[in-house]
Length: 456
Image (cartoon, rainbow, N blue to C red; front, top):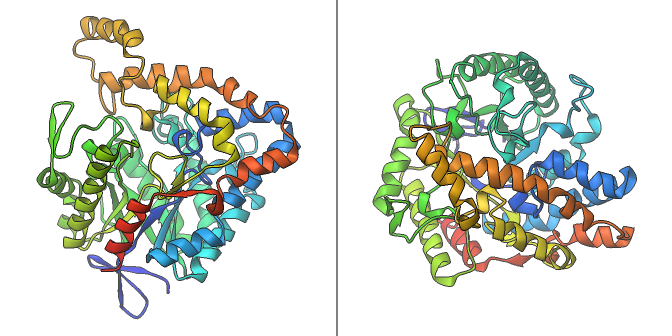
């Protein structure tokens, strides 16, 4: 069932067209703060929890969490929905450690192998997505970046390690028929745009030397929105766009309506999608949306509007025969088809509420939390630096990133870790098992919407 690119479509070996439609498995092998409830970035969180639990009990909790987060029941649910693809974000730290670069950690593949197998047994393809690369390929938490600097693009050492790692991954899965392909760099953020193109040239050549058959899914620069960095159209390649709707963000306004002075309705969604996929249409390559999806608030009226955004986007994708991967499958309540409950939410729920009050998670922040406290600094920056427009999203976002999502978030790390102190092994297992499907709440409106679309 190995796939390949044929013109503007993906096809099987016998030429049957396949439109990949499914979900992203965010927060699993690349953990994210808004998905599993911790503050700051994954490696900082893990270090804080390890300090409290000790190495052995730290391993007990996190291995159990990876096991519970996705198992056969989750694969069954996705198969029942009609999903035929899961994009699997991973963190490089599972496969290589910073103190032993270029040494592949065999043990780190155990959960990835397990889930690819579970999905393949049900006829569901996997796309392996390197969401966090050595040195961080973009400026935010989801590349496990504790700063606002994407050092990956500044140091050849990090790039060498990424190429070596992808050679190992490609060699491991080169004969696997249910691996649709490799998404080697999620949302690159090369500020000057001078390194990412040549790096892709090098990476493609290296992976192809090991595995010439599998599809490459390549994100554009500037968080998968800028495709001008590609100097050639590589064979057997999908150029991946991300298509988040402005009105669907945590700070989104009414739909249809204005968000921070910009109008958003179905026509604007269609225009934005047209801009984001212009390169694919010009080059005659497949259109695949690697990430999209609104944030839900708990307010029935707002969430109905968010579902309408999603419904409109899916209809736009259907009309253009675009594939897609909805972000995300499972979390603690912001976006998932299902979300955790039980002992984990009982223990960490108040802490998660504090994070929300402070706007400490970039993806869950409206940028209005603690506004009175932060307003003087915003006014100072606007007055003294009126023309400051930092990459990638401008001054207001940069200030909030530095203050809320790095400074405040890192200050919250000890408080999060302390909530593990004094727990027995059984209690740690129960926390992890709160993410098992049997413990989760289903977001029925979202599940029904997806099932209806996938049945067409």
